[in-house]
Length: 478
Image (cartoon, rainbow, N blue to C red; front, top):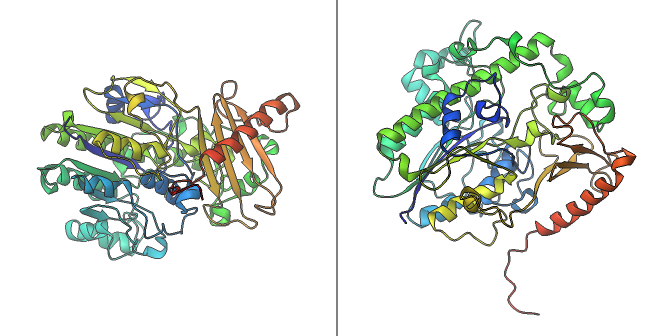
């Protein structure tokens, strides 16, 4: 079999339910819905961490957070790390990237150091905001729309911001254009390709071109999922995070008015719809080049967004589905049954899947499993759990916050670790996702569920042992 092309489309901070195909009637995503109809939608895909860098490192290394070592934003991945794209490049793939990577600290516009990534084409731009002189989006914007670039840099009242830039000059349009350029012009046409388009939207700040904002009436959108007294039964860190996000570095839920929350939700949906339009342009280019039948198209996101649900904003030490469950669509014409739904997979499974499809052996360090059997309808022996680990991974708290989630069957266990991991009190969450899919009722301290909690905590210990790094070869008995 000829090695397939792989086109990966990845957003930043998109919840699993910010998709029409996921059953959301309020959001406009016609191109992504079509992609889901033509491929497989994994309804319960969990990332390995609810913030950017640790999650992306799990994707690119196929390893859980404690094993790749990038445990928090602002930490650099070990410079000797090999990404799965290196193996693809060594096997003859033409590999490229546009947009965000975030496998290292980028604070203050720092140019992200590269590891052994295998990317021949590397059009890096961490975000749309002013920063490194190596930000390829800013170079393009200065050349293509100098007046808009200068206006945004000035930041005068009435000037476009980086988030509300007109569509033709927006970061998401740039991602679309660069991806189309690769498909039509820049790729080595005698080789199969792997290309990843890393959109920044729908990451905050919450804003989009006016034509997309106008598609949504804030008052008509659903209100945040919560109850007035919800936090009284939840771990204490949620009360702090509700008052101030990002450990005090950003506005908290309680600082927004009801109208502002609805405006944020409308802007978030507008950003997703903007990405959807760019996905449509990219898919059209794939068709026009005659590449669609030979290309695996993947759409996913690195983590979710609280968006006011559970009286929380943005991201942090939260293991709610809206924070750690993401879209995952895989289309591969002739190899998957169109329109099929399946679930409970993890981001660590993507790298093994790409190598498996390419006929490339996965390294012993990989901890995920190829999704190709599931894509073919064979779920025999597939794991029945998902693991997510937060290790003070966002803005640092004092004392630090360490949280571990286990999803198993229709249960979710979330352990908020205490001594000796942290000086915080040990507590947790337990949800019956069949009876309580919105995760409003915490059963952690419920006497009737003490046995279930104990069983899940025992299973979590076994999962942690199973996911330890024992990849180094044993050369002899002694």
